Image (cartoon, rainbow, N blue to C red; front, side, top):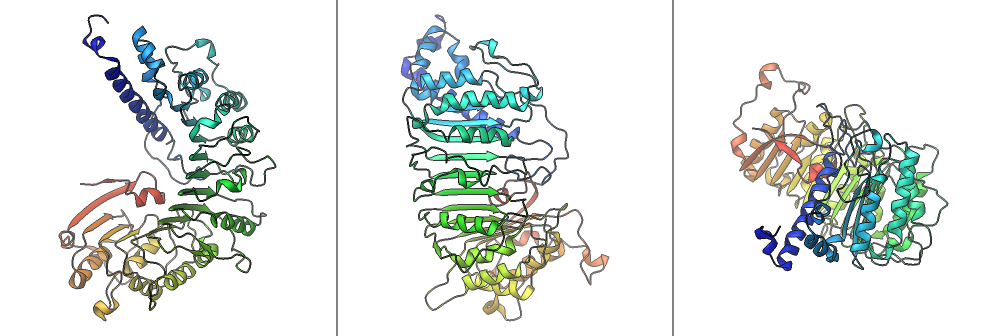
Length: 531
């Protein structure tokens, strides 16, 4: 090292380099966590194991990425001293069960981070981890006596998780962010029970809490009898995700004015459970979230008890996404009881797929949207900038659609999402102008159109016929289906559609399927482009 130019760098310059190393470590771990969640098409945020299917070859995992920061400590005594004496380098703790040295890694981070706030991520669901028989990867500075024989069953894996949670929970007063993702109902319940124990310190600075039970049809104890997690704490949580985990694990104080982002994904497969009561409890919790800006609900619930549910105000809500197999049963009631004056982006997902076509009765939802967008002498109740409709298999009433589109004068972005082959034609036909001209023009402010599973014939009509009255679209994103049923009344010669419409939009994008056909990917435009 004495002959290396880098050894001549001052400590401050080296610290900057090590900070960059930490950022690279975090980015690498994030990429690993996302890429390795795909196993035969099951993505980390899928409810069930059969939603999406990956038809390519499965990629082998080499295990979790090793820590470059730990490796840097082994270079020389100066580097070890400098890194170990810089607590801010040890505040982001990312652990995968694929690393057999994870317990020692936790202890190292807790010791060297001093009193600084912690951001913790635990991934206990890597499908290729050592406990499923994959190769191990050990960190260079740890005691290899920690190695465990592979494969290891769920109980041993759970015991190892308990040790890690116990180490972390002693420092719960330093938790700034905590994310746990697992495929095991047993493991996440073990963690929640441990975090329900009284602690000397309170989780008084916890701002981000993500609890995610993924790839499982089982939810975690909707009627559990354990105390709420973080007892006695009034955590200022502003970012909360509960995926497959009931909100009954949280104290009501966590649903407070601090919350800005809330995502609840909960599937109730038990037909004997009264989910109307669950829906009422949820709405009561929502009533306290006066600063909520984004809300995503994936819930299968029965109709609300409208006679006992009072109105709720979410005055700052900007983005709302709702996904349910029972959407027609309760979403209209939701819109009726929840006041959202600043809502600008709305996504509705009917959860239809080619293996499970569920025909959502869309008329009730349309009627409620029509009521909310109807102009009054003062203003309209709902002025959306973006509307995203995904996974609807039910053919909507053309007259209701046209009435809704005509009232939605502020909508600039419309998505007619995938897996709605039989419905999207009807939704798209509603965009065609009528003989009444501009006075009866649907979605007059539309500038960006994103469409899947619609025939070229209809897309061409929409582009050209709207062009004559409203001018060209700014952007058209189009995924052309490989095979669609021949439209009624059209012969084969009519299905040969010229390309004269593509250059009539300012920007035309031919897009491929989404990597994951979830509403979040549709809205954020996570797809590949075709030549």
